[in-house]
Amino acid sequence: MGPAGPVRPENPKIWLYNTEQVLSWEPGLLSHEAGPVVYQVQFKYPSSREWSDVTVSSVGVNCSKISATECDFTPTSLSRGFLCYFNVSLRVRAELPGLPGRASAWASVPWFQHYRNVTIGPPGHVWVTPGEGSLVIKLSPPFNIADPSMVTFLYYVHYWEKARNPQASAFLNVEGPFRDSSIVLRDLQPLSEYCLQVQAHLLWKSQELSRPGRLSNVSCHETSADASTKLQRVVLVAVATFLSLAGLVGACVFLILRFRGLIKYWFHSPPGIPAQIEEFLKDPAQHMLEALDQDSPAEDDAWEPVSEVSSPEQEQRALSRAEGAPTTL
Image (tube, rainbow, N blue to C red; front, side):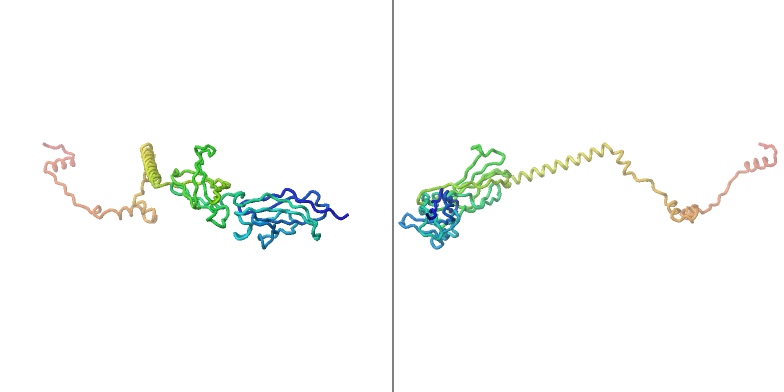
């Protein structure tokens, strides 16, 4: 008896996330008894009656006679891969290499339509620039759309003040939809910190289909001051500076009055040395008295004649006292 044929793959499923398209499956439980196997993946559009192999020429990737248990046919460009607005059916089977006709039954997955079944991620990038009582948001789409006239993205911004609880619906604000990738949140409180998340919705116009995407990560930013707030800050700073200077001056005056005696003692100049002594100390060989004489004015050394005038009676008394005789009056 020849070897048993391979067992049909189990649990085939399709993964669609943004542009990712991956078909995966599990090997049959008894496939190891038939030896190593390879897998064949085929696809079909509704308008086609024939199944086609997933090859490089048809889809852009080879999933024919592969040993892996998945087929990643994520398009490498907008012109490759399955048409995103078409229904696509997929099936997979196991084969014995080198033995044509020794293949398992096909395992199929329900048809999918990329735009209808895709899981949309958050915006690719979110840049936030604080403005005067506002936040300027620039973002990129979750993925590129081949035909924006058919399918486009709309954006919603969820935001709240950081000091408040975002779970409370009264504090959670939602702005949108925005078609542009540049968004401005206005009428925000100046110098307040806001947290936000951005969500992209895929809109398929002809089908009137809207699919919400995942929220971006929470980011918090503080708004800058507007013109009135800046003026208030300038006035407050000026008043605070004036009050500080006034308080400093008042404190200095109080200290001066309180400790004026001590301050006068600290700033009192020490007694100076007389000029004559200072000259002597500079030249000790010169006698101090000579230095004083040299410094005195010339008028101090001049002599003036003095004459004494006496009367005859005074001369008689003086002569009598000299002879020892009594004086006759």
